[in-house]
Image (cartoon, rainbow, N blue to C red; front, top):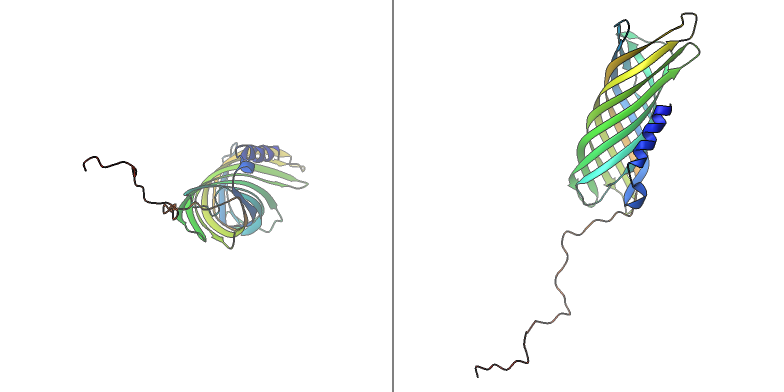
Length: 236
């Protein structure tokens, strides 16, 4: 848990979020088709796991919700509960609920940046901490992943926007496990994970304004420039 707090703190310190126009809000992450394959470091035994679809809650900062600029950065902090659906192809009937904390960094490049809609695409970096603990078993791992992502923001007015994005991540992970019953034992493992995640956002924009593409140059109160009106034509 300490590692996750350090990651969150570092992410906030990297952004001068309070000194620029930006968007903030809440969102619902929905994880689907999540799978992982891990290998025990000592025994080399492998385990394949499929997770059930799950949802959670998140807080988001976005540097560009509706501005007429190409680039934007989005930071999401989210929490989900992950349930195991099957292990090595067999249905899993345990009650293990993994607690998952994500720090989601998205680098957006706008394809459409109109007054009402912003459609973007870009890479996403995902840092996650996932853990499970009961009276007999403790397990935790850290995951680092990359994902292609695409999304859209729809501006409903001068302040409120709705957003949606989707990604498919590819991750590497390292973790530890421990049994605390009479089979007391512990170990570590490495592995890979992948999965599809969709996110639905409610965003609030503060200080954003769209720059005008052209500034009128017609000055109605200006008069024609007659240089040297009082100069006598010496050719006469």
